[in-house]
Length: 302
Image (cartoon, rainbow, N blue to C red; front, side, top):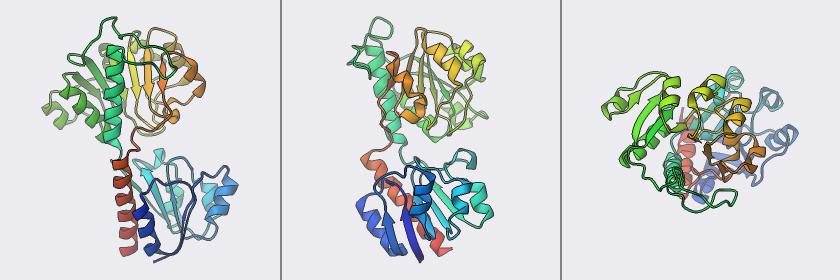
């Protein structure tokens, strides 16, 4: 059993999971607001030996050095690589601190978000995030059928988006670190990034946090009258070429402000961002809770 568990920010766990956490420790404290500074984070952790956090707070080496009692860090959010994590995992591991994270808990909602916004864009349904009446993307309402869609990053989330759009008749190609046999079996085409950007009307980036693949050259290949989605947790581009690309006849979609990066871009009529994570659904909170609890239980048993 752990001596003291601190949830330093809202974790998104369902009530029964919060109750279960009590059985894992002698003392449990769960904060319902986000810490506003590193000093506040250190104060909240205090002498706790276990810390839980979501994706909006960062545990740096400097913070961890000031909290020597920590033995376990549970990330109640996606963990793909140490480089993309909001915890300094390499430093934590060097100090004997176990860090766990979860994966694949909110992808279903992201797929629904992409399909929903793409249908609205193609048909001209409703208004933009800025309240502007939409017009059909091509002047005449279109279906997804036959639409050329390129996926940048065919991991679990990217693969699910590809499958969803393929069901509606889209022609799927993708760029990834390597060609995937299961994607080939589905009829998806593996392309170099520049070719993918050049030949598809819709591009969807599904990359790990802090992964940037779109630079000046890539935006020159992407060209104009294109639709770009970003489903990652951070921008997948350099700012200047992205802003220049937005000045032309293009459309951009993302769900969170973190995925957009620069909130000043919200004033542009072709930028569509609602500032809400599409992956944080009722069902996702259940999957999140189950995986977070399983991680702690595994840690305590090993």
